[in-house]
Image (cartoon, rainbow, N blue to C red; front, side, top):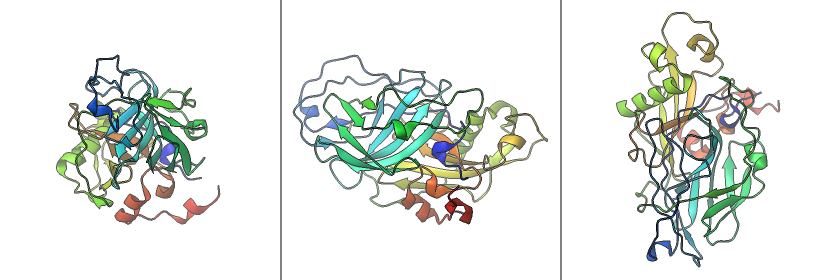
Length: 326
């Protein structure tokens, strides 16, 4: 049976999910008052302050800016939707749904994209979740985004708990709060586009891989990226940079649970990553890269959260066993 990112064991990255925001059309024209902000997801190196958020009611067409929805207080387990504007105009949105563990690591559930042309319910296209390929969502002026019947999408997230952490249950609420954006998002390509795996990107991916496995101190000098195995691309539907990389261990033999020789078997040497919407917003040794799963065995990218246009762009093909029903 193939293992997708949304069903991996808890092999996930230290989260640096940045809390930016989302604006509904007309919000920016009213004077804002400071209100208690819903706290965001903690980064490895610190936290970020949320801007005041007093939405204006009456807007009929959402204008989506880069955002993170979350009902999780700082440093606490919980669910979040990392949301970005799409490329086809007002109302388009996309991103990734994640769960953050107490230790700050994340697991991915699914990536998504859709268009909210009004405040009415609209369809999200979903990738990476076996339960569904679409869901109904709604952006409101509350300010919230609601995913209907999303319990089936979020549970179970992980097939086998790892490192002593329990499998997260479905979220108690499928209504996620949002915050106002500090500015318009930067312009991006309108088609899936390969990015150069620069030394800085490679260093960030390697750092995330070491941190999420707890190997930075003990095995940091013994694990490296396999040359030529790093794939990086921007996807306009989700509004995120994505990466897939393979790692190599050259240190002494290890046989203890969670050690490289053991954990890097069966696809544990291949990681899936996304980059937070604004990696420069917070200090980070990994430049905003978040690891949200491993490839598993066999590696079935078609079942992962990585957008299909990105997989096609990379020219990666799943093995035949990924098509088997079990």
